[in-house]
Length: 242
Image 1 (cartoon, rainbow, N blue to C red):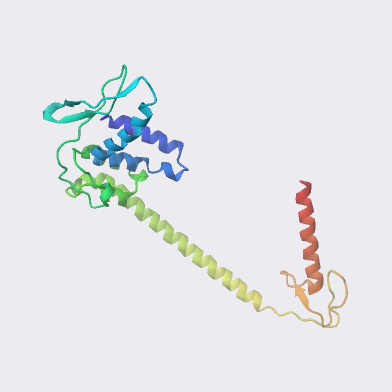
Image 2 (image 1 turned 135 degrees about the vertical axis):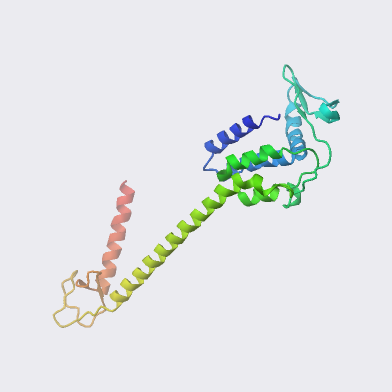
């Protein structure tokens, strides 16, 4: 429809409403593809509209062609009663081929490069930069991409710096945990004839024992295991009551 302002407004609405859904986050890239590959977009739109239009009597397909300004030809896709004609004008070969995959390359027709560059400069934080660069024509000037690349690279550098800080903090915390573990493993517990189990209050003697993290509470290993089983049963009963 050649209404880029309304297209961007629609993308903003869809993006903001479905920001948590990964499938919605690519809406700007879809618009960029339409700008840089209008003929392919026209074919895809026609394939979607015609099956739906055939279900309604008020919508009919028109196969006639009409001349546009400058001798270009445009084809009417659908005509709705009481609505203005909607035309696409694919004509002439595209001199700017993409560096990306074959599906993203324009297959003929004029491209809306200025609108695409404006979209990149305005919504740089919502578009995958690498994919966008692969989609642009080869003859795109670097100076036209400054408003897109400058904030993108600045934001990327900032994120990388933050990630390095977080990484160093995590490494330091990991070393601290290892040091604490080493110190706890070096602890010495002395068992004598007077050492008592804190659960059954019997002498530990030569039985297997366990020690609590406070380093002072001694228990028989059997008593410790039974106490853990009792706690597990009580926890399961409390959950059932809720």
